[in-house]
Length: 129
Image (tube, rainbow, N blue to C red):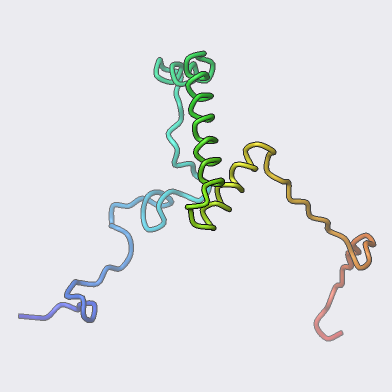
């Protein structure tokens, strides 16, 4: 009986690439094609309209406000409780301040030396020069 090649130590036959019936550019080794969305779109059926309507439903908005207030209270309680570990208190205080005051924006300045404008220099290099 001839022996088939196996992956060393695994006891399984080698696997060389995606299944034979996997199409090009689709679900195969890499999953969805690059840039493709994996989210299911909300269609214009009754379910999609009902989901969109929840944003403006007064009862839903009120329930979210109550839940948000309760979560802020939990964060406040953790941040001010001396019995909690220090890192937990700092994390709770940080999250609470982010929600109350808003997150700080990160600003990046891109400039040359000593604040001067960036200079772009193009050089063409030819072989033999």
